[in-house]
Image 1: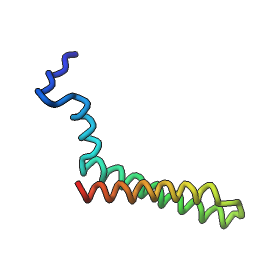
Image 2 (image 1 turned 90 degrees about the vertical axis):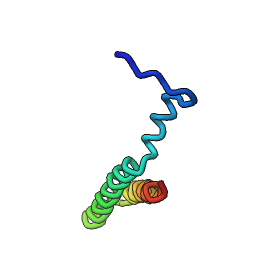
Image 3 (image 1 turned 120 degrees about the vertical axis):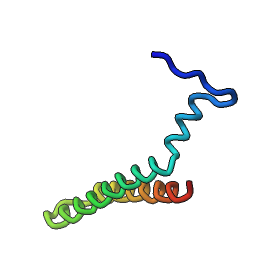
Length: 78
């Protein structure tokens, strides 16, 4: 396959990297991580009802929530 020639002053890597920071990509990833955090909260509730330790699931809730918050901030800022 033939790739298009890069524009003067711009590299192909810079063009690809900017797509990851687009508001649309950040919003999609923010929604994905928000849904994952909510699903993890459901797992924590199930763990508490069943009587299992919920420490690992709480950690996952924290990580997914942190990623979602950061991505929502990036989506609003760009």
